[in-house]
Image (cartoon, rainbow over all chains, first blue to last red; front, top):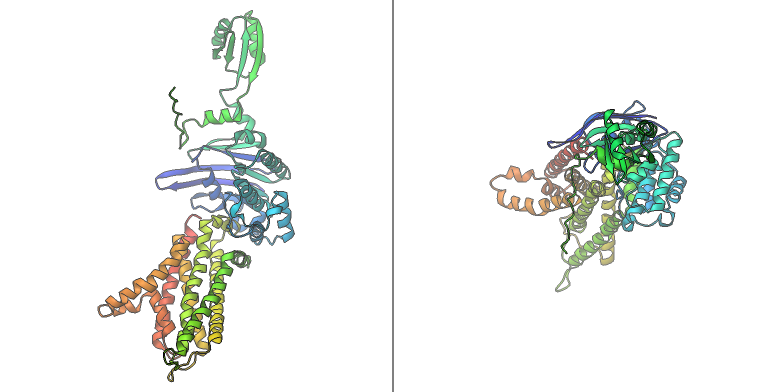
Length: 307
Length: 248
């Protein structure tokens, strides 16, 4: 199963929330979906599922979702941790979702055990914590063992153990040949989980590439050098068009990712190297750099406390 | 059929459905008990005539309100709790799920009506049957059918309004306030100036149908229910367009 989004677009009044987004989701891969708040991630997911009306279409193995039957075997979606009726027990909630694909009750109980909700299966979810709501939502998404999992911020509210469980589960789910498409603001988690990234900002595509490629594009990838004469090394770098900036007393940050090249250059100029370290940007650093200035809802600077 | 099974399970796995049915039974029993008590007469203890239609018809008013609660909840709660997005992910063909919802609202109306009649019978049995006036015939099966149509259409009207507004409360309140207050006032003020308008108001037409005479030989009653049915069909049509075209 492959999923192909073609020219997705959506207006809210005069605001273009999603603008001509096209991408392809491959099986066997966890694809992370990143973007600042208000960038259009949730709207994109709803457009893919046909829940919101907009431009473009999404093809699931070449067909619109409505052409598949049962739909639950094609896609399982978890869009919000609070999408349940407060007086319908967790088990009945899943029984309801099991109806379309005629999933047996034994599978409902199996999934409740898998997500750790078996002890509260017959309780009303009105008192569930955010984490329990996430588990119930995830249980609903995986109930029919769909070929595509589409999850919007599934890690919100989960404790560290549950986040680790979720990461391992999604990776193994993808390894079984399924499509996993997951949005999250927990970038450190995404770095451990995703193979591929789709990054949007203000409804527009910023990146559609592997996680390694995305991080490699960051200007924060550099080589740190501690040497006998940083000024001389900086001049030497400048002669070949490589920028650098001083860092500490005897350090230099060279805007290049190749440590061998920097070492060879220092040797040619007779500069003694004391430390040579390649520094790679984290996903968070790369993401913040690529999306800077695109955030719709910016946080203010904290007020300085008076003494 | 999957959509119908889904809707059936949806309505039977929430507590409020059972509460509405129990309320239909208990309130109808209580009301018919009180009414039959009036029929027994007071003062000198001599029996006062009371027709059967009052004994069964008054509880039907309560049944209609309970059916409207169930009808409004059938769609309003889906939006309130976000479940509509899960529903429409499983059933992307929206017309299919809308038809299933309408079918379940009709079934809910039938169930509430049945409970109301059962409650009325219990109330009458507990307090003794009312003494019918000499010129009033006992209700036949067509009268019960009349009540059923009344309750089901009332429930559908609430369902449609809740669907358009996406608010359970408005689905319940608009028929109730319009039918029991606004239209009654309009009837008083406009009966001479615009009787045609008064004759074509939705929920008061439904009330006229319920209170009119014989089932088969009653053109006024038939016109009234036809008026209400057209209104309900109109509400449902608007709801269908909104349901299919708007964002979930």
